[in-house]
Image (cartoon, rainbow, N blue to C red; front, side, top):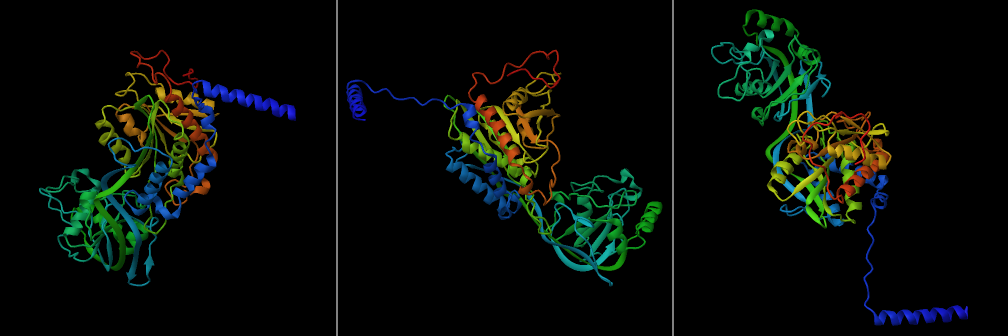
Length: 530
């Protein structure tokens, strides 16, 4: 022991002398491999993110509503905690814009009260609320008003000519007499044609009605659908529902079919009081300029900061329905947002040559509005930025757990030459990266039903990524976190991570666009390396 101590003392003195007499060379940190980084990704942690975002406190994350604002704030706080930077020229993590907001809230009710017995109809089974319906809470007489038409010249037909509907609810058919589309003419001084739901609602409102119950005519099935009055058809104090012809329409007017037959055969109105009283409660909110926001953060590139690789998912969902039911949106798309968060947390510790951007989109369910605003209202105004790839994650929380599905971009008018029908370069690349994490990627046809579409429209290489197989609970309150698989979240995040890391460090991301179509462009299940 003593001999060892003497030896150590000698070595220590020699080291001290060496350090004192030479220039100290800094110890350079060795770069961490993509494989080592990817191992840090946790499906269980991603599931915790998903579980929290799809919790009842965020009330379904409806774009422009309180739950979406609070969920977006929470995501922005995570980006800040992990050291992500806001994007240039945005100011902070939130990219605000306004959109046309409409939503139906509780309470909702439709029932016949007079004469007895009371008949209560069930929302979604017996009737639906028209999008852009206003609000109403009345108990009043129902008047049958034929097809609900006041036809412009040279027509002389008017379902309201011989009736007074002031303060009443009208019962009307869809379409027009004989289902003759020659009657579906533009209505002067309005944006409507005569058969549109919006015109029927506005026409009833202009005649003094406070509500409309529309049923299908007898040339079509009895079950109500979903329809819109359009923003031009919105009247704040007018409620409009689409009802079941048998359970609602015939309960209000027993000779409903006979009256349609008479109108169609004589082209004369058959409007009449139903001598029934209905209680109608519809509660909605409309705001033509409702604020909402995307959440965006980035890890700036060390060598090529203006070359971006973006991963995104939409964090909005459908909110709270008229019955008070919460649409949790765990798979659609808290799952994709959870993967984006897990990627941001892990990758934020490892800046790469190129910039990596993490996006949580709002208002996807309203028509891809958040990503649209980002692409057309921001990217196209940043001439120095070049987006090399966009990866979209939508409904990645459950499926077969055996394969995933990518999206092949359409060839004409984008970055591939006319006639080329093979996978995009990004999809080719992701197929190979999938193999590295034990994942099979199966290409399918291009579609425009998620946020990747807005990037494709401007020629950016993009892939929509989601799990194949069944997605139980889609767009229902049953889409809850307990059905989301941590495995799906982990393997998805690892696949995207290895893709982003390797794209961020490659010398050249994509080869030059070929000038002629390849000899065998159709994907056959085997993609060459790289």
